[in-house]
Length: 100
Image (cartoon, rainbow, N blue to C red; front, side):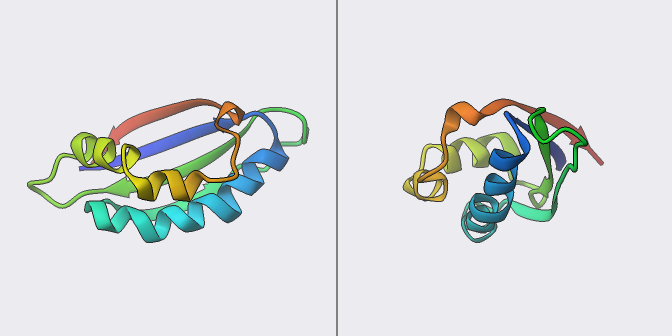
């Protein structure tokens, strides 16, 4: 199963921090939970103070539940370490879209 995840962040500075620092950590941690990352990219809004989005395409191999693996990851010490130093309040929303 593939999934597009859209993280809406409060502004471009926080989104850049999330993309450049914290997503680099996710790239190392997520495979431990059988979640593969196909790509991550950062939106370039015209207004630096407007919400900014980070897009990630992820998948799990057949037989694995993306929802279950994601829950395990988000409850783990790996996730806490990956997000250390990032204000969770800067994440306005996370949208998850199932893809083929």
